[in-house]
Image (cartoon, rainbow, N blue to C red; front, side, top):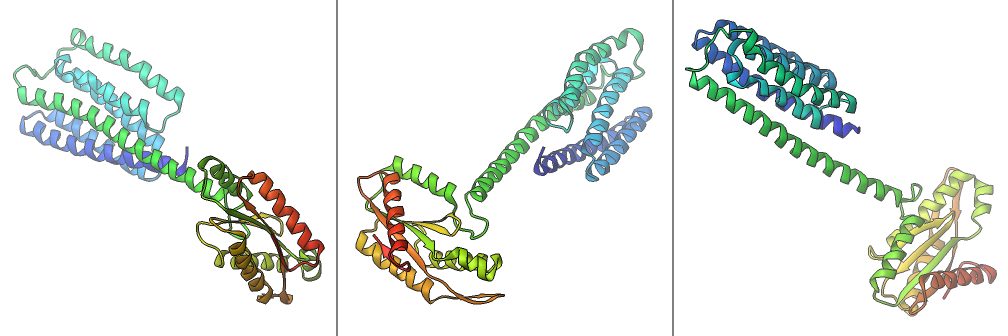
Length: 342
């Protein structure tokens, strides 16, 4: 169970405790008014239990608070049947306790099964009480109190089901956001904050299925002599070079373009709706920006260059276009580096 799940359960239980406690306060006033002081005393004890459970729940011990509430409701149901007989239908309070416990509260699956299994037994036991005990208060002539009991039972069911639905939906929304955030994070390169190769592959799948506007220009970009930079200045300097290159690529592309770290010191750009002529100008601009950049590191200033190999995607497959871009990158490296080959 996630932290969000536990917090939502804690909130749900707090709401139930407050509403139930307030209801018992109103019952207590009515019992005193009717001169039913033993029942009023029992009701005052119920309110005290709710207050204790509320603070237990606020302390984060939701399962203990849940158990206290369920046990209190069951005992209240048993005691009410003893005092008033089964004609007040107080035995159905057992179901009020079992419903949120089975659906939502922080119990294990085994505990939920035990609670639900015990419910028919407790109800049957209370139905037998009038055969063993004579209730000291006759409820037959007290229509108002019977009406209150009946309504609190119905409202308790509605409250439990409604809150369960609301909180469950909120948790589902939170989980969806968590999944989306995880997916987003899994598509980002942690070093450069550019998209990673996994995202590029998803981008290619979308292109294959959507029949995108063409032409598209794919370009593989490699930092020249990156191994030598690492060996000479250290890996921290190499990281600074990667970050500076990523920043230049980010500044010189559109939001609709694909920009990702392909792997190591290699980057990939996918220019949407881009002809070879426009692509060459854009890539020359990027190449020149990198060449002019002076990167400040703890080991001193570093100047770098990049080589770009690009290929246009028309009727060929994406795999073929990337293969051609890779061949052009190799040609650029072989013929002197720091250039754009399309």
